[in-house]
Image (tube, rainbow, N blue to C red):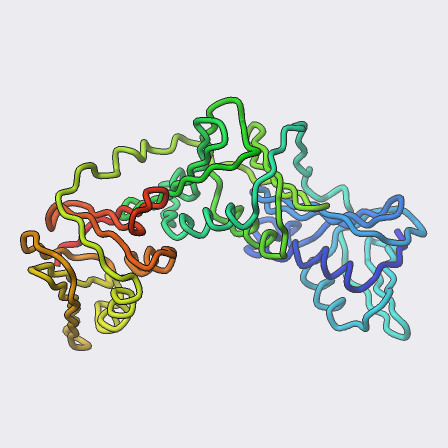
Length: 368
């Protein structure tokens, strides 16, 4: 392999692979990116066996070939070079030589044949989806994904399409649940879809979208969720298992509805929770006639409270919550006012934007 490629093009290729390549060294080969030169392009492949990415860039290919090398090492070297063209040359024993001007470097490589078999797909049914709206759906659910590896089916976001143009995304860790629904004019799976996309895959989708892409194309094939963005293809291995019936976790007919300015309660929550227990982040909401008192107490630090005026005429309710859970919700609501729906101090509550039922959050109470 012998090619000439622009620094910016090589950096663009490698930057997309850095978060994917395996850093835990359970399989040392996975710290590498596979480079393949052919025709007039350089292709890059990266995988951790769960998330796989391939992309290509224009290059002057003087000798075709392929080699696997450390993604981070090649990226770090390339980043420090001058703007303009550089050369990549595969040497004996799979070493890769990097040349630019009077600079010369060689890094240890691995034979391409040792690289894991890269996943493929056959589907040609890709649907265009607005990238900003897709990213919003990820942002509004990913914080509720469980980190408990023993509950592997909760380690991702449930992606569901039960009717034409409609997508629902749901995440829960057993203590809270986030759900968002949207319609997309060009999506029609022609069948009910219900798959679990792992958290790491969602972060990679976000990373691609944040590179100023207006639209991406998605498909579900077998055990893979596939996303196309320009020349880049991201393949995510879906989590096996049955997602719980999330509808049964959403309480119905809650008796009390409280409307509060979002910024008012968020700023108060940040102040009061500073003295909450650092592990549990427990705070107490005390609703009474026309007011809400938010309190926290920590024997090792002290206590704090703040009183907020609001329009409330229901019964007195004292209910404990994890402050971080409430903050996560409030940060992802754009409306000026929020709605909190409750029954009593032992039942889960619902938080959503005022007069908006497309994005709801269920939060379990805490005993305080």
